[in-house]
Image (cartoon, one colour):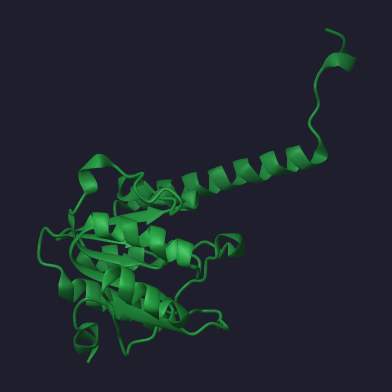
Length: 214
């Protein structure tokens, strides 16, 4: 083959590959760091990807939700975190080994959490491991988009996974959909984000969440 026949990458493709491999190395470094310490000792918080509609909670919201999860779960019970990846490490740290935590998330950067990570695309709400049906004592969900389609499909997943308590954090404009689809009630507690969002957010649950936070 002549040199002129050797395929070459466009500058855009080459840049994309460089970015991909850099992110791979970054994930591997984080994972190796966690493995060397044999425990989760710090939050793994990547930059928000706004194309994925990612908006991280502020610290007071994280701590409030961690408290609720901790109070709701008995030993050996299970919690599923759907599309709220920054809750994973604080919840895992709080619960230690007394309960199981699974993160269902579209963003594969969070695969650094190993076997606790389950890839999840709300567009395929039932594309889940077969053994997860009605296996979670608590499900916490934060659907990525404020749309009827997103809350409807995410609700399918929630109803499939949950066997008891459910928490949904989403925009206040989704109130009627959340109540209709999941029979949840709006809480006084309001989630807040690191970057102030134009849309008002609310929390919904099928138990007295506010009482836990008093």
